[in-house]
Image (cartoon, rainbow, N blue to C red):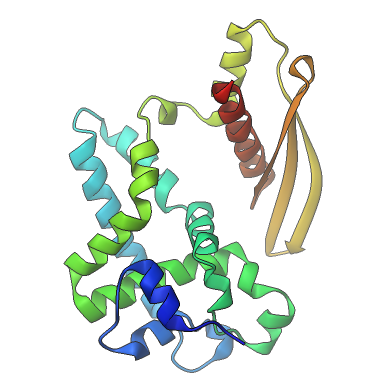
Length: 225
């Protein structure tokens, strides 16, 4: 049994005047009928503008390239899928029988599209300012955590430089699992630094992304120390 959509709306901080819009936003094309494909297209544009505007205001000394990298880190599929999981969005999705059997409710691409579709539904129901408020609420912590310097180099490069500065050996990366459908694979990678007896696990839609995720986690671990 699916949870009450009203709970999702409370978590989002928005109540729909037209409940049909949130129902459509949660309906994947595999379920047929009035699905969220068009909403996802619109939501992608709205999200991109809201985040671009917030970054432009907050990082006034940043270059166009720096702002683009920051925006990409926030609106990419992996980030949106994480947000969807934080709100347990997969439990609310309406999927066709095939997607249900193959675990579509947990697939990153479907989850990310659902988040974008919700933003569009809020925009159509309550206008741009309401959509902006919800987006900034959801992204508030991620926006606060952004560091301009951190996004000038990728996590693997920053980890390598940190270890070199500490005169430690470089990390190794090992693929431990490849799951999912051929068109939507999920890679799992272990990043190890044997001298520190430390390792972290990362996941991503490609080996490179999984390695970057594992490197990011190890950077956080070392920073906490």
